Amino acid sequence: MNKLGVLLGVAALMAARDASADEVVRRALVIAHNGSDDPSLPALRFADDDGVLWAETLQRLGVETTLLVDPDEATRAEGRPVLTGARPPTPDEVKREVARLRAANLADDELGRETDVLVVYVGHGNTDDMGRAYFTLAGGRLDKAALYADVVDPLAADYVHVIVDACRASGVVGSRGGQMDAAVVAELRGMLAREQLATRPTVGAVFAESDDGETHEWSRLRAGVFSHVARSGLLGAADINGDGQVEYSELGAFVSASLRGVKGLPARLSVHAFAPTSAPRRPLVGPAPDGPSLMLSTQLALSRVSVEDTDGRRLADVRRAEDQYVMLRLPERDEYWVRTPTSEARIPRALLADGLPPLNPRELQERGPAEEALSRGLFAVPLDKDFYDQYVVAAGLVPVDFTHAFPPGAMGPPPLGLLSRKSPDALTWEVGLQGHQAPLRVGPFSAGPSLSLRWNMLDSFHYGVRGAYTLTPWASKGVRTYRATVQGLFGVRDVARTPLFIEAGLGWGALAVSSPGKYMGDLTVLTSHAAAGATARWFGVRWRLAATAAMDRVTLDGANRWDGMLGMELAATLGHSK
Image (cartoon, rainbow, N blue to C red; front, top):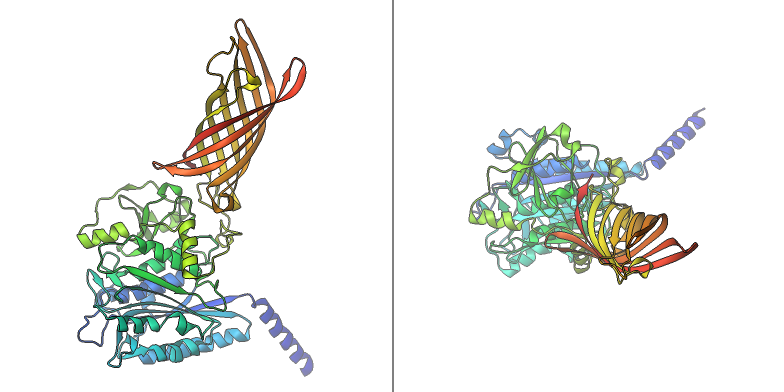
């Protein structure tokens, strides 16, 4: 009997291990500290606010998060729920939390679960009298040796992701760091450099710096610029292939694009993203659990979109590429403000799933030279496919998989009308002008309008319907032709990642011929259509230029024959519908 019980217990354990083998448990340790142990460096204003927002962001993304922060009075007065269990960012609390995370990760390992831990630090970066870099804690320091020996290595996680917004000063739009010489900059960079991570193939890092080692915080965001951009990316703005996960290449490219247009600051910010060498496509965050989510539609294409709560705290920003699908997972709030530079709308939590309501003109505008420099430049460049591809090559990262992109399976069924991997507004209307050889060779050519309706599907395919009408503009020997067609379409766009497309159609047509005193027609013409060309954006309008070929099955003098016509068509996109 005892042997049977042991066998059953072993079987149950093995079954539990097999059932959980594919699970990934994500945990996070967020350390945020305003203070400085260097009398020449004033305390930061927003590192504690960043810590709160990091904790809220990661919790929304399904990450079990511990927050170590000593909030100032203003932050404490907001009473955010994540502050309830927060502890001060002291060296002892860091060690205590690392030990707890280690025990939890080892327990999950016994159950066959993979574990990832994100370590986020926001605070002062500095160097000691010996030139050794460190991050400031409350009553202590975290230098390079301690970062790895006391934090990263003991976690016993399958993968560790380190995100750092290290800073040295503050201001309204101030540098998080006074001027540093090249040796100090190199030492701080060395804490997270690729060479430092080379001996740890399961550890990755993301951090920002500038030419003089500074990063920046902005009072309009009440946060560090890099931290805000990185959080926006993790909340979905960086998810370029829409699989619900954000990889290093996506986050690095998004931050780089978002910072690209910033001008008017003393130094230019840049981002470094080093993925774990043993798994270069390991996501920092995975599919998010159900929660408040906002899909951004094509009506906001190429416009910077900001999401704030009713307390004025900025939660996320993104500038959508024209054909980009964006789903933002937002921290829990009762209501949200969605704003562009010129318009805004207030959306209750319960109505987020309905999409954006009409936006109203903004009453307040951002003012001040530094504010305007960031307002114009931050998120000025969208993360489109071209930028992403160029960034991945330059950074030496492994690109994401676009094979099964959009819509993300983890998001559940798409809204009605969502058929495109490019945007929720999958239905496009186009009006065109076409010219082709005259039917039956009556006259030199025929010309007239066309109207097309296309639904964009997965993997660059589209289908639709096309109607066209042409006539010979003048009579040839007193004879004119009139041709009307309605055809179903099927095609491929973005061929080989270029603006090229091809499509074919088949349908019904009517052909008429008139001459003085006579009129003949065939209302049952079988007609086909083929087109190949390219798309381009010009004067804010998307155009399609195509070479066309048509074949009509006509009855002439009692005999059936195919009548071929070559031509050209220029079409403009009128808009999108859901």
